[in-house]
Length: 114
Length: 110
Image (cartoon, rainbow over all chains, first blue to last red; front, side, top):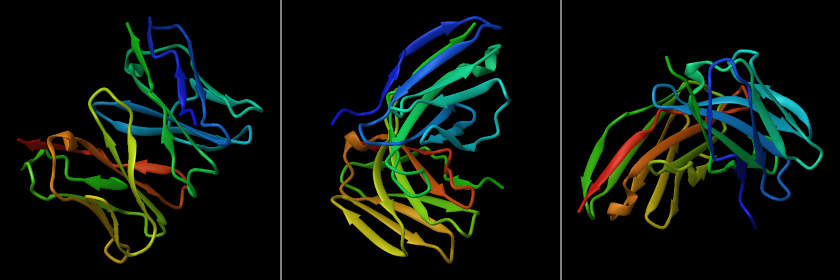
């Protein structure tokens, strides 16, 4: 069974631009969670989607948004990029909402904001 | 107080020794506990999950959970250089989301 895939793997943007990242979960998984990982803050939860509905949201500004499609694929968008948004963005999928099931991570998208 | 705390390390052990990684959490209603391993430049991969008090063994890995003390640990027996990585403790609490500790960097010396 194929694992979680994320595209693109690497991205360079400039301040003020916006970016969209994509995540395809493991086949059959309906829950997708997004995390931001930085050396200073570690792994921080952004949001979780289950059956196209945002189930939970972390403590990030409204510039960070996401959505999930009927095939469980998910996208996250960051608008008006700031230098501090440079990070590894990880997507994880699970069969059921994250509180009940193990999450499996994708390879991540490394975003550099200049 | 952080919700999930780990010794930041770094922790160094000689090859063949037992590596002990510790984690405490603040949310008393936490029900699910996970250990992930993350190699440099890679994404986290699941090593162990544990849901009830006591020990759970899988090969060279043993997870220990004590809900009364709000403490979870990971023991790695017969440590190998390939075990050198950052180990992340993750807990699902009342917020129904997975919260990670900052990780412990482990180096196994040949």
